[in-house]
Length: 423
Image 1 (cartoon, rainbow, N blue to C red):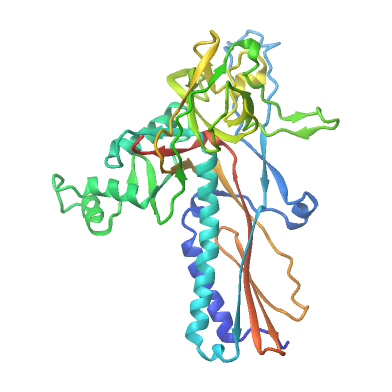
Image 2 (image 1 turned 60 degrees about the vertical axis):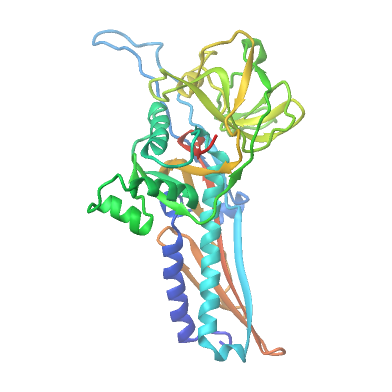
């Protein structure tokens, strides 16, 4: 075929793939679900992924009947979409092709950008949808800062393995500076690595990573209120499916629309607590004594906004409410204050448990017999890269493009969160 790849180009593509695989730092630390291409096309590139079951136990002794104690198990799920289709196209003339080094640099740049796109997508989802919020009044600088993330996860029953923390460069180096302080002894790997490479490593159960880019959160000084009485219907009842629109459809239970006194000045991403609404351990359902943290997903009107997670107190007594209860309403006397946690503009540092985030690799059905040369390869995580080449005889120009298709979903926002310094 006239547009077939040369041996040199195939070797270059293999080198490019190896570098691409190495660059997938953040996405390597989330779970992966490989989709079926035909099924995804028929489902408009959306598949519903299950959230973890949470069960309730009862007292049962030998010889006693448990008739009437059987529960309906509610399996909640969330929609996951192949929503990212990224491409890096470029052209080279027959004169430029004489410089093989230039061709290699262009391929490296394309690989770096696509790997960055995937890592950035993971970071964006974690930063925008993680609902565990930890703040400090000081800059990053000690073990205690990260230990707060460990504490909030432990208190709410998040699994204590496969935990990750991605920090902005300034905040990461602040922690490294604590390890490398002159008051600490040298001659041990931890302090030496911090001093020589600004490397933190594992801290308080988290594998830490340094980001060369970080999302920012703006300051919020609004003071709205919310009605937490039973009459206000602020308590959410989870359900697997709904027939409200005529047919049975799945329900996304991660979000809830609530009514507040005013949404003036509020923005997506804001983090807040509600007075009297305490977090509970997801398994034991015991109150932690700490206020539950929430995020604003969207501002819908002058008095309504969509928040995450939903407020599930179990007040209705249904099986689904008791199984997925996540708050204790310590006070339901009426109007409760909403206290925002992002009081100062800051970098958003993300932490999560592996199962909270999921990467969905996709696949393009690019024809290989349509006059365009095609090469494809798959990374260890299942992410596919497709490289295509087409020669235009009129301009003596070769067109290249490197493509990838993927999705990222936060299956459980209460197993991911953000760490904000200087608040």
